[in-house]
Length: 246
Image (cartoon, rainbow, N blue to C red):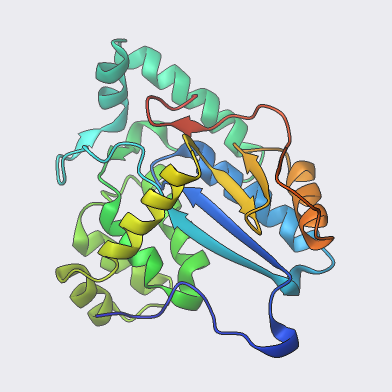
């Protein structure tokens, strides 16, 4: 069962000149920051109407137990072998940086969650996917919502404009499962080891929560059909399979 696809149908001269694919995980704080910075660059891009953005799935911790309702700080502390206070300091650093981009994070409220079902919903959100992604990030990092609780996901989906009954039915079935797995497999083939990861026309790549100017340059070069593959920007903060650079 599906709600809406993750991309709009376009034809003729309306075809996008630039396809931006973004691999991210809702549990990654730098993905939230990177989304805000990229969105700011896109809003100022003169040819933004000819840019199509597709959000791809990635899981940093696919083994996170569903419904565990554990503090993310406690979990990070265990995985790193450090006290909770040290984990809190790490996340507070991210929160301070995020605040500069208009993102509010309540680090003590974050509940560790398996994000697979949330990614499924994103694939089914169609034209509402950006609002849904923003709602999921806000729910996770600001409001302390458990994103592996399907009732919570339906609530966030409804607030983003999706039909709650259809969202609930989709989550109860297997809608979107293959799409999430396909994204993760594509990321493996592209040797993506950290998120956020932005790819333009499968030619240019940007890794991490880069400054807005780097994303603006990505859009400019992609629109001009730069030849060959390249990586733009320097090192930037992001999350890997082993850890999150907080």
